[in-house]
Length: 259
Image 1 (cartoon, rainbow, N blue to C red):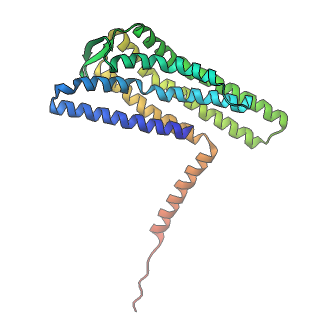
Image 2: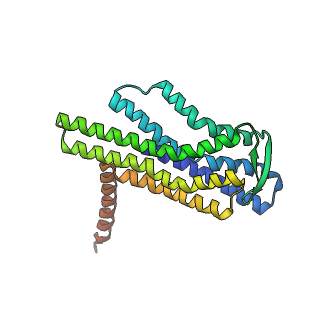
Image 3: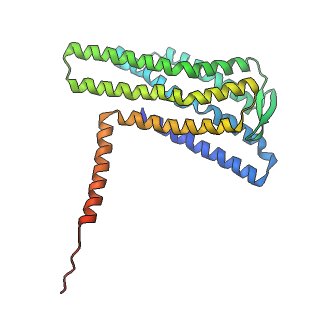
């Protein structure tokens, strides 16, 4: 799970770097013909961050079926959740990318932005914002329920205390992955809601949202990593070995023979 989130974070960061490089190039060259492309990239960059919030939710659904039910997740439930969570953003992002009934609005980043007047556009946009707030809470509830059930089962079977400790650490790690992105995403949700209502977003708000989002996601992954004992021990071991080697290299003296 941590590896998946880390890969997603790397991909989103690379795309964000690419988008900002594009903005700098456009402003330096003053190329007006690329403004349409800039508006589309801005739309993708704004909504692509939702992947990081949705991932822990599906992971907890998978754990619920595999750990408690001892079977594969229900395929119809997964498809239903995919439709509910992915269709709204795909619907209104596609309306902008494929230029369906476009309306142009002011945008401080790309000079102008794009929105669409297709059917139910505003409804799906608001529905998506509500889902971004509710999903982390549901993910936390599922994770907490799994933790309590595993604790009860292991207590009834007389499982070792170390195993219960590891379960608690895993619960904390998954909770961080579920709840912390919500805290990081709140500014983004506010920005999206502001954009939905007024069809524009101040540049200062956009910069603040990006700093909180990307910095917060990095902290989220780090916190979820160090709560798992094997990862924590591995980090401590690597740091200790590096420090030990550095110390030894400083203390070691080389004697050169006269002959």
